[in-house]
Image 1 (cartoon, rainbow, N blue to C red):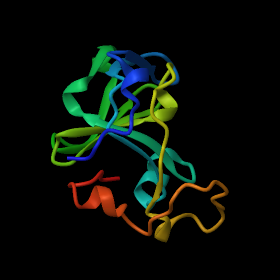
Image 2: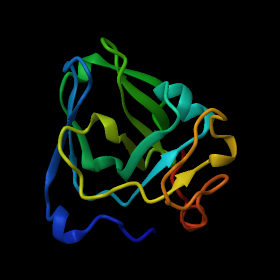
Image 3: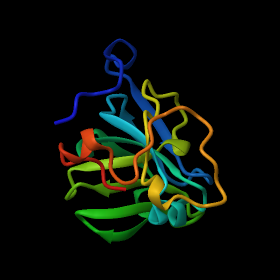
Image 4: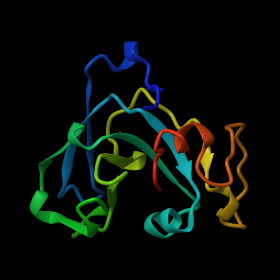
Length: 154
């Protein structure tokens, strides 16, 4: 298991709130993310309509829908899917790692999480029109540290 990147001092049992663009779906998630990254794979680009998807990973049972569960649109199966608002289409989270984790789309968080993305993954397939300008480590596929731990799927 990966060592959490979230600062225990900042997280301290905080619960964060997130929601879709139209407000039909709201969720709560513990501020106990284990990892965060910017994923540049083609699937994440298509899912977000952007150059990359900033996400934070956490055990699936630490996220709960607080309102609008009947407005969720699931693309995939129980062990791996994207969850969107069926009204506005916002990508809220992805279920990954055989259903054990969720990757919260960081742009849907209302509250400021303690974690920040610490790497760029799948830059081997990044959009050719996008230039990464920060100094975070870049990995052609999964980051080595996460791949050996069963790492985050994109």
